[in-house]
Image (cartoon, rainbow, N blue to C red):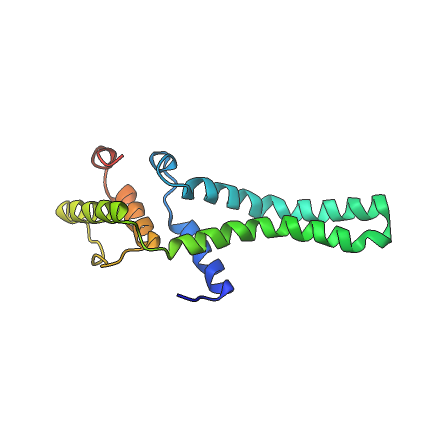
Length: 148
């Protein structure tokens, strides 16, 4: 499945917004930590890149502009790396154990009367994220506690 880089970044942003940031999921999935680090780096790395490049040029002079640009590019690439990981992950098919868990959650939510989309034959992590987000918003804590 070949996808453009911009598509992967778009999927990463969408996945970052969809994934439920619940304490119960931190131990089970790396997404929570990656999302937290990516959000932090989106807000912090651009100023760090500008300041580090400016200090580098100020300290070493104009002849070191290429090195200053390289340092700034490194800091600016950190949020992009997180978005790329999230975009790639969102399009991966769930492994068999997670697929069984996805099906179980889907059936339990349907039994509780929650309107969920049709179950996918080959669910991906983005479908799991949507289902988990719906489970945490639509169902009460007593019901979701059994899964975690």
